[in-house]
Image (cartoon, rainbow, N blue to C red; front, side, top):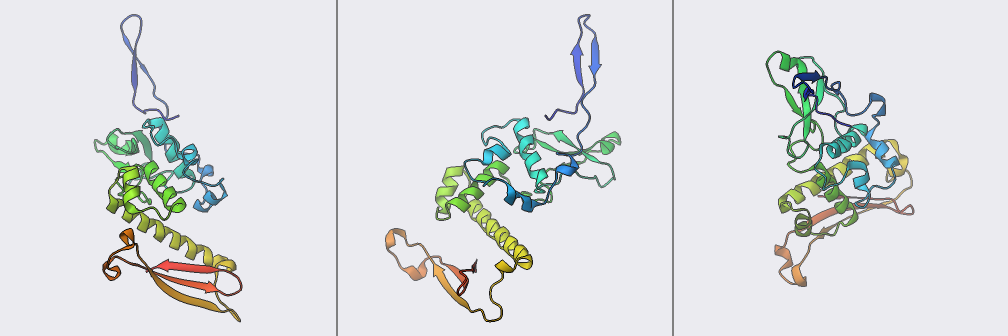
Length: 243
């Protein structure tokens, strides 16, 4: 359980004040030996929009404890840093911060504080979530919807989650980039992901996708999305990329 590292004062029966020591500072979200490669996410029971709250907390719960549950999960699978070192060389500790609107906690340097300076670092720094002005839980749910319902329009997703349509478009683009990076990384070490080879025939084609409102309109004037695809005959292995 996360505790505010500040000192607390408690009034005694004789109206004097006595100081109670705070819990030790926390320098990591989870024990170092808990941290595992991000690929280990694939070993979890299937993540989907119905069970994701079990791992990252209730999307409607804005408590610090709920945020800590989410960050513990992210740190365990390497999605955020589990620990950090300050440029001064001191170890950063996890601190509660209400000004971090969506996260409610951040990294702070106690050594810098003793010297009269303030060093604060976002828990998102250096991660996929950096510079995203969205609650991380909401981002996970938008990602789950992108996977489960790829045909949903940007407008419907934006309306469902109360975000700007351009934000949804940018997120979808980042999701596609991540998927492409994952495929290329896995393909290097897995022959089943490689298309072609001696005696193999790979069919290559491209197509353009568009959506005509009410099935009417001048199609050439509508936005289109080109897709380049490959299919290996006899194996069913395929690959496509948006261009």
